[in-house]
Amino acid sequence: MFTAFSQGLNKIISADNVQNYKDVFLCPNPTCSAKLTLRAVNSSIVSPHFACSPNHPHAPNCLFGLLEDIRGGENENCIKSDIMTILNSSSLKASSPRVMNSSNKPMHAKKYIRTAKQLLNYCLSNDLSTDYTNGLTVGDIVLDSRNLLENKNYKGLDGIRLLSGQTVKYCEKDKYIKISVSTRTSTNKRIWIDALVYLPLEWIRKITSYLLNTPPKQFSGHPIAVLAQWRKDKDYQISTVVTKESNVIYRFIHE
Ligand SMILES: [Zn+2]
Image (tube, rainbow, N blue to C red; front, side):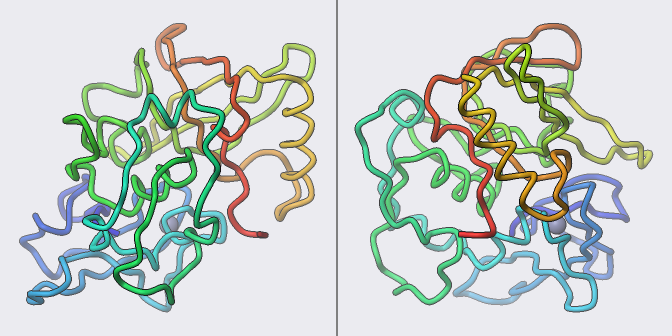
């Protein structure tokens, strides 16, 4: 991964910008206690990046940990669909379904980004400044613990975003699930935004049934990501109506 929370600077930092090599680096996910070390500082082949130290691994439900094997160096071989196509198209089939876990694939295999899950994989394994398509960077697309404080994103925003956060609760009566994205601040407070995701009841039941049967066997605290057109309801709350099932990503581990 290319981003971490610097304890010395009390903020999220890119591996490229580290000046104090003795600093302590934490996972950007505030619910994860992983400690990270900077790697490949002097390498001409691999970009500087963070990896967690064996004694301080990622929490089992931390997406950064689940994605740690994936390197951004494969970018040149990515064939990327633009974000509107991923958001709306229903006909494209997901390719390379093993992308989340494959660590032994050939270095130059072509990789497609045609689904929200593949886009999430790309966004979480690359730095926020990495270009995606059409002038958009990863930081313009994703909203997660790394860029929640930028532009006061935690107060709410309108537009298309891939939110990556955690489940909070669900409501069958009003047909939504609530997720939140949180981060650490420089004063070590936790700050978060709530996001209400309105879905058909059938999909809510499918999601809850999966999460309630996945450790820790409760609805809250699971990683979840939603690609959608969001609108700001009020300060610290946004909402969306999802009409494409694969734009809600919640199966990461037990596949
Ligand atoms: Zn983590």
